[in-house]
Amino acid sequence: MAGEQPMSTDRLDSLNQKRANATFWAAPRKTRARWWFWQIHFWTGLIAGLLWTVVGLTGSLLVFIPELRRVEVYGWTKVAPMSRTLPIQETVDRLLAERPGDKMFSIYWDFKPNWALNLRTVAPNGDRIHNFVDQYRGTVLASVNYNHSRLQWFYDLHDTLLSGENGRRVNAWFAFALVLASSLGLLLWWRGVKQWKLGLEYRLKARWKRQNWDIHNLGGFIFYIPLLLLSITGAYYGYQQAFASLFSAVTRGPAVVAPPKISRAKAPWRSLDEMAENALAALPGSTLSMINFPQKTGDALSFRLKLPSDPHRIGLNWVYVDPVSARVLRVDKLADQPLGVKLMRWMTPIHYGTFGGYTTRVLWIFAGLMPGTLFATSLLMWWNRSLSKKWRRRAMPPPQAVSTGEAAVLSVQREDRAV
Image (cartoon, rainbow, N blue to C red):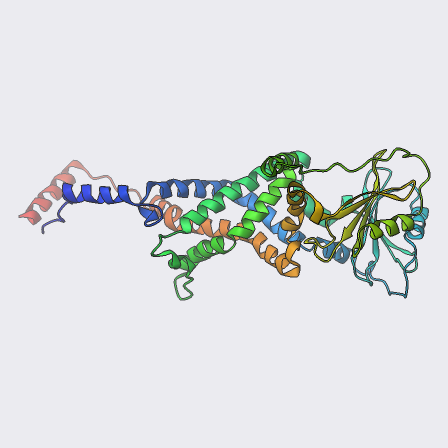
């Protein structure tokens, strides 16, 4: 029986010429660039996929961390609202009377009348303590050491890989790698200007191998923008100074504004309520969300305020007050800040998904699950297309040795069949 005719030289040259003339826009699969994109995309994902999975899963858990902190001590943080709350100064004094060795760090309001006030202190040994106080009655409901909190363990795993500042920077580099891999994945998703709609298909009746590929292909496309934002803002935490320099260079203006200082740091303070009243008056229409106490000599007291237009759940506006005189030193309203400062302040609400309320927070939960999903589906595709075939070849029994006489007989038999 005649064999298949080999491809002519002219036809082979024609195909090579068509491949050389192919553009990524029209026929990406015929270009050499796509092969390189796939290699970088695949090996980057294979090397970094497990870490992306861990960081993504813990990130999905921490989207609702303010609520989870209260779930962790459920039953200790609910209060029965009354017509009025106690003065802030009295609430702080009652807490410090029960924890005389602690130093005030911050006070956090959750904007819910039945949620206890969260007063955060630093213990004499440096541990971070979250104290939940009934703002109506002044009762200390619970004090939680967050250095030994399970939720804080997940937070530190997500933030620093349990390795401090070095872990945070390693995390940043893996975030940059995710930007690279997901961007190349988007290029691999592209099928050409005439067939790009095929990338939006999901075949419910196809075999599981095809559906696995569709999940990887479609999921990577749909969540490209969320993953890009999460990766960039995640890398920001490892290199904040570098991001500040970049934003400053791009916007041709400042990206960080140093807080004001006070001169009489050791003089007696005025009442926290008087300072809060002055801060709120300096930014009309705002709501008090946090008070940050000075941790260094010469620092001012800062009040974090929320305006209805703010993208963050607790606001992005600061009012600095001199605690000795209760005088407002400076108002840092987000809308009035230079573009570079705005970009820096937008990093946190974007990373936590608070800029769009509960809608984006829920979306960010699914986005955090995507790195693990993409990693798992890529491993399955690698197994189906490559590893399983190699495994089967290794599992096959080796060919049996044939003696010289047997080889001669087989040779004669093949010649007889040929005749």
